[in-house]
Length: 213
Image (tube, rainbow, N blue to C red; front, side, top):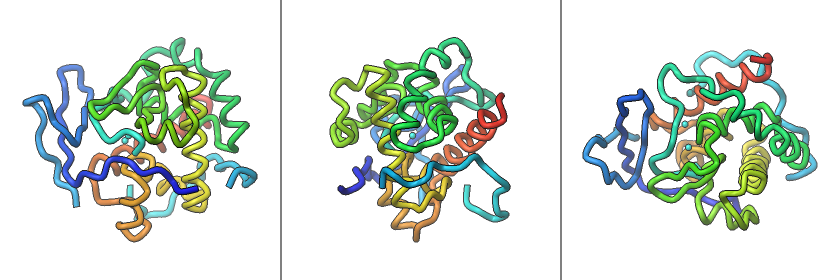
């Protein structure tokens, strides 16, 4: 089964709103956007993070458009109660697909800030910001249903995990920018500012969740 791709436009645009939230899009409809320079199921789960190698390259891949995002200085969800509302679905999906629940939660925080109705300008929807074609390939019938959306995101992360040998930075880069861009970057994190920032933000939250914060 092929890994479903994401938006392939080479130009990315961004702006920061007055709440400090960074928005990205391949199809800027708002005058505030400015061009950003861009240059298998039974395996073990992704392990909690350890020390990262120095010099390793540093977002949402299923998304491809403007989205609700966790902005600068907002690396933790604003509403713990809203986040905990999805813990049961996170645990179930994580166990089914062998993905760390802390990773699912970190991706969800950055992708949608735990808003099940979040939608990007390109049509990425829900907690895990699934594009329509990705949702279809992941067997998600109702992308606004939290359980289905989370399971679809977990399944996609599992496929990326298997494709990239459990390398968390490459997995997250592919989730954000698409696996084809990772391949074109020689298997490394692409030199896309949004993607590198996304990877670091998710990793930071992942470590925080693993440490019980």
